[in-house]
Length: 444
Image (cartoon, rainbow, N blue to C red; front, side):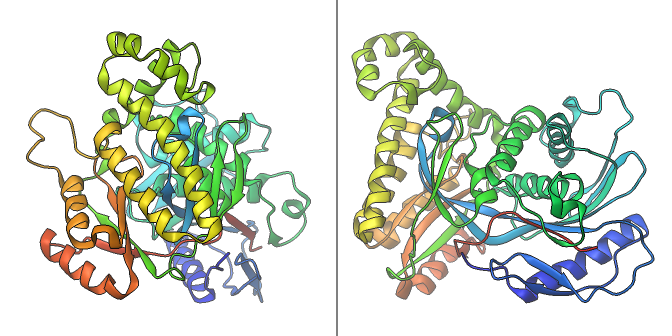
């Protein structure tokens, strides 16, 4: 697992100290920052501080969806990877009975813990960062955490709205702050040091937060990938998802991973996103189960006429996409394990085609939207520029966001220049995968 760079950690701490002090009027002593072998931030050489507060520094990465589009919420399997870009937070108890948060680029918020309804979802906060803070704090307290008022300043390198799960990274980072400030582990009570985190528990709390408080009916892929780090396969069939490491070294195989931003903010199309799990769940319910993963594809095929008559062809196609996509993920994992990167890329292309044609989460389906289909156009350009020499697919939830392309390393500059030129803006972002998951450390 690639470490967080020492220079980045030091710069983020210094930046957050200034942001924190400006927002709340106090701050920690300067610390000489170094890194443990696993990439977590270690603070050493702290000077004397006039502040009694315990400060913690936490971070969590964005994620890249490598394989498995819209199958996590139905008990499927995915391959997902943490990226190098991270969301960071500096936090301390404030003794005020309030949670105060300042988010660089996203304003500030405050939650009064003496309010009898503070832990309930607030409809006015739907799809806001404040909802994520409230939800993570509420779930932490409900599950036995000794929550108290605290201040937190945050910043992020994970770009919002282009499918890199900036919201999941934010949720997981806030959860890591809470565990470091108020958790029950001995290292939380006694002195500075790395805080042991349960990444699966942290991720599931974040999923509940996003579903109940933020208002997005997501699966658990994004949060698990952010919390666990590295490159992992996640099996959602069990009650508690099973996470296992996967070897993915695209560069060694001669390929770079490039995200092409459509500049169509997928977060603005929550209704279209929500329709996909709802459609799949309707098919599952008609088949007598709660998730498609609880029955085989043959059960769907045996009932296809009934599904089409009762629910329509789009829902039937989305269900078929689910089964084929889960099978592809298994085949992609096997291809990576055997070193057959060409087979892996062929399956990426098939996944992209299935998402576009059958899942139908690439172009918008709103009235009057047919003339604006940037994500589909980008895939057309990928096909033109790469052919079978590379691969591409819609990334994440779709309906805008970004397209993931696997580009031969020797053609990256050519690909980026051509794509940016065709689209008329800097659309391409080269992505490095395998970064560490959620980290938290007490600084004082």
